[in-house]
Length: 116
Length: 108
Image 1 (cartoon, rainbow over the protein chains, first blue to last red):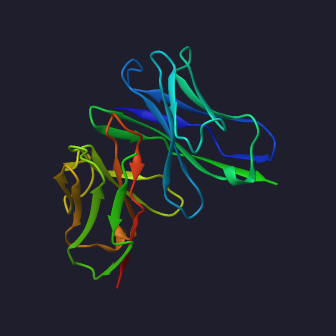
Image 2 (image 1 turned 120 degrees about the horizontal axis):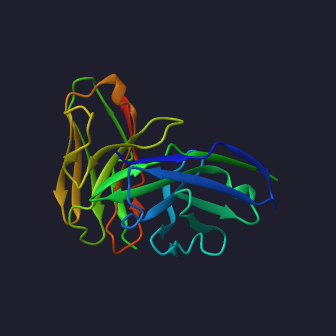
C-alpha cells in the first residue's frame, strides 16, 4: 500500500524560509512523480508542481514558478517543498500526492500559517 | 492546461435520493479522472479513480462513469454522512493536474 506521510503544521512569519516534507513508502520512486497541491482556506485545489524522484527533474505551475522549489532526498525517501521567503498569501494546506497505475494517493496535508 | 468544469456548485437533496455531479474536460483525457470527497479540515478522500474504479472501502453507492471529456459521479441512496464537498481531478500524464471547482452536497 502506498503511503505518503507529511510533516507537521507550521506557523511562520512573512519573509522566513520553510521546508515541508513528504515521506513515501510502498512505492518505487523510479516510476512515481510526486506532486504538490495547495488548498487555500475555503478554496479549491491548485496544482503547484511535481518532481520525478528518479532524476529530480521538476515541473512547476507558472503560478508557483520561482516562488517555491521541490526537491528529493533519496537517502530518506522524502520529497520537499521549500519557500525561501514566505508571504502571508502562502497560508494554506499543502498536500503531496502521486498517481501509480492510475491510482492516486495523497498525504494527510501540512497546514502552513504565515503571519505578516 | 486542461480546464475542468464541474457542476453544479451546490446540490441539496433528501436522504435516499440519487444525485449526480458532472465534470467536463476541455480536452480529451481518456479515463484519467478521479473523484474525491472532502470534509472540513480533512484531506481529500479518493472515491473513484480511472473514471469508474471504486476505491477500496468506499461504499458501493458511489459510482463513476464517462471517458474522453464527460464524466459523472453518482451517489445513489444519499446518506447524511455524504454531506461534503466533491472534487473531480484530471491527471493526464502529459499535462498539469487540474481540478474541478467543487460541488457542495447538502441534505434537505
